[in-house]
Length: 301
Image 1 (tube, helix red, strand yellow):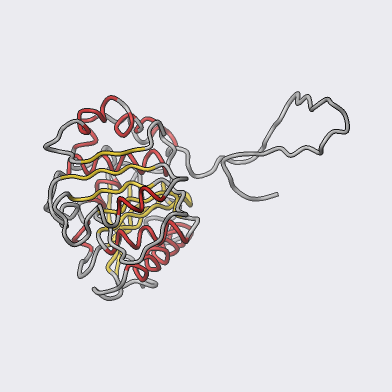
Image 2 (cartoon, helix red, strand yellow; image 1 turned 180 degrees about the horizontal axis):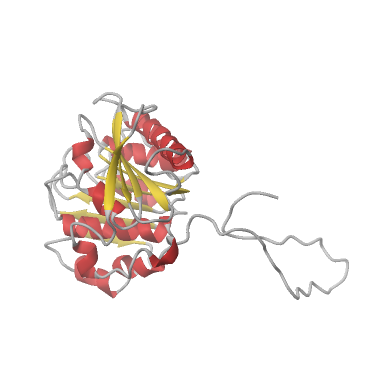
């Protein structure tokens, strides 16, 4: 058989006696999937200092997407080291462009991700339209990885994540809800006027801004967080207005550390990053009231 999964369940026929089964051995053969860390120990052990730096340990390069499909334009930032990596799609908010999250793409790529930062088809696209464009961008990213003759050939391992600001954050939630290929998401000050996301069971990190009047966390992200009873979740509110996750605003050392750690934990299954979200290194951030105004999580992951 062919397929993928993380668990194996054994079903047995009901016995006609009071005795059950004696299982001596159970073996599963196959190839490990895409949630393993890059080969050869490419990503070194993280530290608070390295995660809060503007760039991570891996050298990166950029590639402009030829003939974007389903969205207007895109720039891919990728590790130049060998190996295959998870892909992440970045989606801007209302009236936004790639510049909105230009700070995040290189940071993620330098920690072992292939990141596609996109421009939407129009600046006023709705959250649902942005969710569709995230999915289409993910498809093109995987196709480029499977093709030859481009610099990211062979660099995608089939695992996808998404992050987006404002309406792009609403689009991130749509992609997580509607597309099984997307394994984790980071909605940043997300907005969706009619979003229903109780069925999302993917790991999700909500970053919200305490003084946000455009997309207050208490109106959007917090109710979604509370409704997602099957997901591993992280909710952090920080000082600032609706622009706090964008380039040039907010504490990028902390925002970057949390985002890199979350994606590393859930797209690569790399437990080395868990302490920065669920261990003692987390507590220095969580208990700093000038840095964090709300912190809720489902630890231990």
